[in-house]
Image (cartoon, rainbow, N blue to C red; front, top):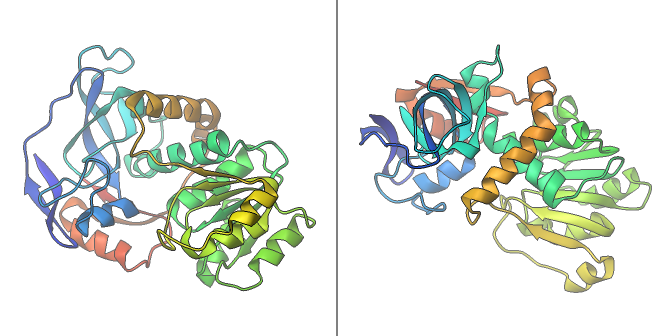
Length: 323
């Protein structure tokens, strides 16, 4: 089969690889569309992302298509079902994934749109609802809100009943678009006054839940912006893997600082994340209340150009490949 592989540092290419077979509890999907993610750039740059990495590695984390083959013990799907899923090696003609990661695509939803959803829905439902323990009426701040998963976090927070939703972006044009996706207030995390602005918006209390995709330079500012007994969920590290951390402020505010990643989760844990997400959010997906903009669609053979577009940070929303 054809697949997008790591050809050289920061370069993707179409290669011929062996077609995978589903194991027990797995399904094989004939991929029709696949979405790009920042983690794919790390793999292309030579880094390991979970079990994926190295020369010749197949790139990709999410896709949509038809179930092509069932592994032993799979009862919830049939050959021909239209599904979207998170999966290793998703940028290929065929992708194998645990059946518990797959979600049926609603009638009327195209493969391109469906391919943009699995990672964002799973990641941000877990961050906002499960790890973040959002309660109706609480305030939520999403750092790095103009990314695909950030936009989904804004929407999930609003959909699940947050009273005030704040998003940050360092790009003024993107910041202006955040209100379309549920933000009541948009701030610039590079602005020296953003903490005061966030606290003022909460009546001086501070933010109940911060979903942080930046880390690095905002770690202490997040704690300054947080309420006493606030929660900070560390989802991403776009601003750096390390930074200053005021331990006294952390203790003073009694903040829960929670790290999340899929890389160290078991198959059973991921199945439960998908189950909880579907129970809460699929109604919103099917109604159109939850979704992501598609910035650009590329044919499969132009994957390297698609990654160059992502690397240039010139996009708003998801970049999709079609097969």
